[in-house]
Structures are given as C-alpha cells and as structure tokens.
Length: 432
Image (cartoon, rainbow, N blue to C red; front, side):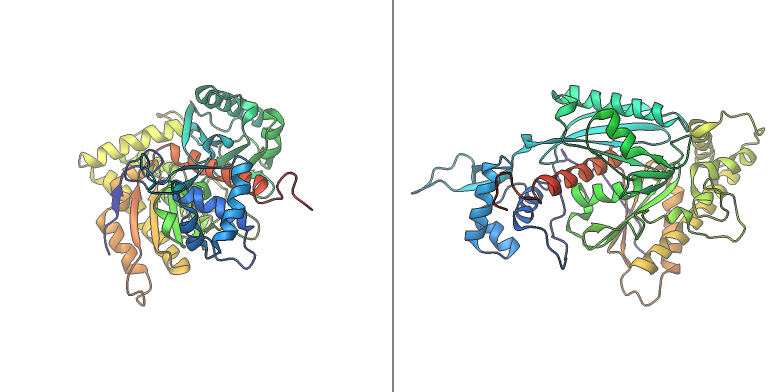
C-alpha cells in the first residue's frame, strides 16, 4: 500500500490552491437547490467564471443564467469583473466574469478544543479576513466558555474592521457527541457538564444566529470547501488530537447520520472489556491511540510515579511529548507504545475503508506529527486488513493544517447556513 503523502497547508492563501471555495461538483440530489443558489455556489466554487461557462457547468440555458445572475447582482451577492484584466474589447461590450461580492456578508468560525480555542472570520467569498486564539481550560462551565467565545468573536471582528453585530452567522465546532440539528452537545471534554444547549446559549450571548457541529465533521467540511476534497464525491478525514474523530463526506456532503451525531470512529470497539475510554465505555479505539491512552502507558515507559506529571489535557500532552522524544532517542519501551497505538489505528482505518470505500483517506490533527502512527509498517497493516477484492487501495494522505482546520470548517458551516437562508429562500420583494 502506498505510504501517506505529507502535504502543506491547503487552505486560503496558498498559491497552489485553486481560486474559490466549496465543492466543485454539485451533489446528486432528487430535490436540487433553487437555480439561483446553484449558480451562486458554482461562482463561489470557481472563483471567477463567465456566464457562458456557468451555463455549461450547470447544464442550463444561457438565458436562465443571465436572468438569475442579474438578480444576484442586483441583490449585491455577485459582481462583474473583466474576464481578462486590462484587455481591450475588439468590439461591443467588454467580456466579463462573475465573482462573489466578498463584502456582502461576513461570518465567524470557532473551534473549541482541549488545548487552544481558535476563531477565524471569513468574507462571503470564503477568504479569511481575521483570526484569533485563546488557551483552553479543561472542562470549564458553559458560561465561562461562552465568554471565551464572545472574546474570540470580538477579536476577529476588531481585526477585520467590522462590528460583531455585522456577522451574518457564527459556526462552532466542538469535540464530543453533538446534535447538529438542535445545537445541543450531549457530551464533550470541553464542558464541565453534559447535555448543554450550546447553540442557544451562544446565540443569546452574541445576539447572532449560531450553528454547531462536531469538530471532526468540520475538519471534513474544511477539506471539502478548501482542501483536497473539493473534487471528490466520497472521502474521509480521521483526526487525531486529544481524542480520535472522523468526518465522512458522501456524495459531496458531510454525513451526519439519523441523529446528527456524526461518525464516531473513536468510539467503535476494538477490544471486548478493554481499556477504559473517557466516554465511560471500554474497548473504544480512542482508548488505545489518543493522548490520554499514550500518557497512561508513558508512566511505565518513563518510570514515573503516578502523580508526577500535572493533570488535565496539557499535562497529558506534555507527557506524550516526552514519550515521543524518548522514542526518537531510541527508548524501546516508548517506541513499542507508539507502534502498538499505530497498529490499533491501522485496524480502525482498515474498517473505514471496508465499510465506506472512500476515494481518499486523510489523516489530520496535531498528533499526526508522531510519525510512528503513520509509519510504513502501519500503512502496510492497513493494506493487509482491507478486503482483497479491492484492486486499488484508496490514497492515504497526512495533512498539516494546524489549529485553523476546524475553525475554517466552522466558517464553511456558517457560510453554508447564510447561503441557504439568504439565497436559497425567496428574494426580498419577489412575487409570492
């Protein structure tokens, strides 16, 4: 099986990244979105496009495109730019392209995590216009986290030169069990309580519409809008940070399941009556590969007393860093811990491939720096556990977006919500 390919940051601002944002292929759906929304989203995805090319891409008549784009321009959502900057027309009207009016709306995306909370502001074309971050606190009360959210929103708005009340939407990503439709967080290591109504509390504090999702779903959404998933219909993103998560894209859309709880790869069972997971159950995959799983065995490998390292997420992360340094220095016990975790991760990845058959499997998150977890031996073990009927195994890539991955996904979630609300519905003044 081909070893994973490490790639640079693929988000906005990378000169190798195509213009625009959003999936470049529309989802196959028996109930398509209104034509004007399809047109707007195609323009945003392509960055700049002529009316003629737009008609060809969507398979509709040029007259329909002209009518709908005229309304979108009138409403301030699209603008015209020279098709070839600086070119003089040979005769008649200069050739023009369509582009999203970036200043039509702004949104914010926030990712809560165990180590650092990160926020970005995006314009309506998906360009990042500001970012901010704050250190995280373990299991803080909801009210405290909402105040952190308010400070982050204030910071990105100040940097972007807009008022917080001018944001059209705020998207939030958190680890744990999240009901996307209702905005409730059933459980998350970020909060000190279970079953918190995060969307309602955040919206009440900010005075803005808020939408919430699992952070791994938003990692997949970031890849779908800004990264390697833009041209793919089916792919998966496995995130390894303090815990293990997974986002799955099927038919160009994030799959969330019947209850909106997403794909909890980290809580699939790999050992009956196995190690205790932070969710309270035993034998979860996460309990063998996450920070706290590695830290649990690091005490033995590093010959530490049980209470010699500070508790909480940061204490565990520091301990794992020491463990990794020991492994790199040749400590056989430390190396064996990472290799064992890599074998469990390989088992989980093979299960993903066998169940969902993705075109691409992306490994992401801060802990992908630990090369033992995606070493050639680990990838070979994935290949040995997938169905032999597969003629070509899926590509496996390691992406290093850093802290902004989830925040960009939350921003994309917010952009999608605003687009549905402002462009998918009837235009103001339109006939009933």
